[in-house]
Amino acid sequence: MFSTAIKSVHFTGIGGTAMASAAAAMLDKGFLVTGSDQNVYEPMASFLAAKKIPVLNGYDEKNLSHKPDLVVIGNAISRGNPEAEYCLDHRLRYCSLAALLAEFFIRGKRSLVVAGTHGKTTTTSLLTWVFEHNGHNPSYLIGGIPNNFTQGARFTDSEFFIIEGDEYDTAFFDKRSKFIHYLPEVAIVNNLEFDHADIFENLAAVKKTFSHFIRLVPRNGLLLGNGDDANLVPLLNVTHCPVKRFGLGAENAVQGFNLNFGPTATTFEIPSFKFHLNLVGELNVRNALAVIGAAKHCGLSNKQIQSAFDTFKGIKRRMEVKGIAGGVTVIDDFGHHPTAIRETMRALRIKYAKEKIWAIFEPRTNTTRRNVFQDELAASFVDADGVIVSQIARLELLAPEERLDPEKLMQQIGATGKPTAYLPDADAIVAHVAKHVQGGDVVVVFSNGGFGGIHGKLLARLGR
Image (cartoon, rainbow, N blue to C red; front, side, top):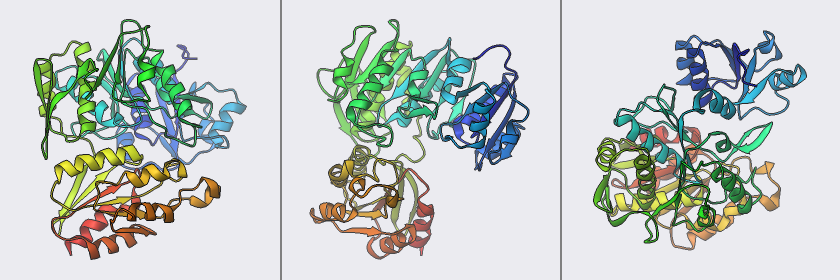
């Protein structure tokens, strides 16, 4: 498929961070690049314009009339899309972004892949910064924006490629998980839980795809797994490659102990070295332990790793303080799985030990809109002092027996004595918050979407 005959490449769905970055990198390699998308938003619109990559607005068969040698079809594209149908009708050569990355950017390099249900973006960002800070200039692809970098993806001539490995499926024509394509030398698996209810039937199906990923680690590579995770531990009993477990339990080879949680930082030790991390919470200690294991495998010293930790600035939308207005701190977090919410709330409780913390949650993923986590979702807010849930998105598209029950959710959370509210949208939530919060309180918003611009609206209203 990836022959020397390829001179021109078209990206269907070019507007995403990863697609746009790959398109620009293909242009730098000397390929003729075009692209199309329904809408291209900032910052990628300006990024593509600066690269002078022609971007066609909307999907149309005419966009492929020049018969490109290869069409890269984005993960969001489905059957019925005019360009996908044209590719199939005319037998054009096409592939997924994951396959393109593997063949043009990863193969032959040292690939460090970070997988798991939670913590992928933070761990990948921290690992990338450790290599960048120490002069390795790595290629990377991260599903978020690290504050130490200006963009979420970069392609260089470095021997290292660091990539966030998602278990979500690859494309409409390739239902394997994306991380199957990434040729891992080092595979980090942070944890394993049921998620993505739209493509995985149950936890066993998730375990199966992670086991396939683990099989790809070569005998001269390294599998780093969270030894504290009961779902993951059985998958770590392999003999085809070296395995190291990290975690807070005494049985783990890369072990953190003598933990000291402060309001803005954490210290922890591994044998013969004490680390200091400018992040809070057990979840971030485990993320850091995984990074240490991977970096040491690649030859970095404890002192080099700590030097990078000292200057790590975190990631947008991960416990990110958006501002303070009327004495109220407003925080944005991408958390949308019950475990991620619970662990983030635990970390925030450490950081804001004496403050009243209000949690606002938007159930919009294909999993949280369903009742598979009905009880777990209610329990995830145990460290919140008040909980507000927005109307569940597109609930009418689910069968009644599959839907999350918002009335039951409010009853479950309210049974603990916390004030609760189930409100239709961001504007209603802002009005409610303004009536109930006081100076010194903390408001954390959990959503993996834009949520109607709620952060700006909260700050503007609280400022009055």
